Image 1: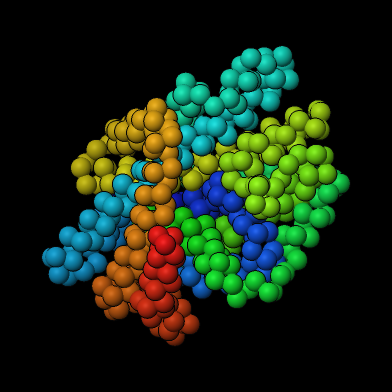
Image 2: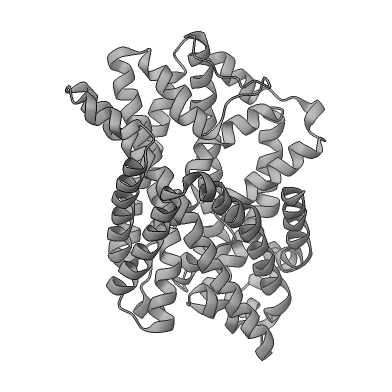
Length: 449
């Protein structure tokens, strides 16, 4: 079945695709400032511990269920329990994952379109097309609709190519470019005045905050959400993984790469902010905290680039290309969730499934763009604050409680005859059964309160 559905040709292709799914805009624009606001090095230490204490076990739940069933999220969760009622709950949970992934992609496509607009505007301004450049970076409904449509079309074109010739091929191209660009930009920014202060704030540990409830909860949330868990993207990618691969080690490599890129982003963003501060650009909000997220990306950094003349042009273009690539590698995996369901549940061809899912999500993105003030924040809240952690809890419950241990062990023994003697087998089943649901529930309750 796996070969008919499509399968990653190599371990590297899978790792790059899965890490690309996890590496998104939040890793680059949110994580560094969150670390700086929560004790710097103390937050980094806590985040790294929790990434492998929480996010890795939850990631393994999705990857193992996907590889075991070689099905989309709905059919995969429905296949684990023996009781018909629980099977229906599993299938409905999978539908919930499909809807949540689609909702995330609907607003994500709008923001990704802004990234593409900024990336294009700087070269256009350099050749004198200032009116077009200004249109691309000025908030308006026509601009939002156009750029969202372009980004969704680009995402659909990759997914339409299938697992090997679409997702894997483009992940192998885009992820090295993303990493190389991030490294080069970081190295250059670190040479500028003010950069060392930002780096010091990022890395210097404030251990007085390490037991802070806010620090722990924020680090837990960052660790869980940075790996794109809870919406079925990792489960789908796991379903395209060869039975010959050792899933625990492959999953660890994915987690290491994703966490590494998030940490590396801190070596760019925090130093860049304090370089901007030295150059007279405001980097603090009214409450004294560092500006972050959209204000950081679309106000602070462009203002910094404007102070740097020709060098700023190249830096700005490279930075927004970097952000566009990060958005694209994530959007590909999100679109694959409903596409896989339509192919396997309703028998559509990949082309038709991609067109149907992509245009439907694009249409909803258009609705958000037309009612931006009312819908944009609401969709983000429903999908990421409530939907994603709820689905994460259910996936862990299915992996820990409803998946028969002999079937799980047989899955691990496909490529490791001594799996029963490994630490993974001795710890992970109990960990995902008890610890992960409790911790994710804490995150959910805090986000609601």
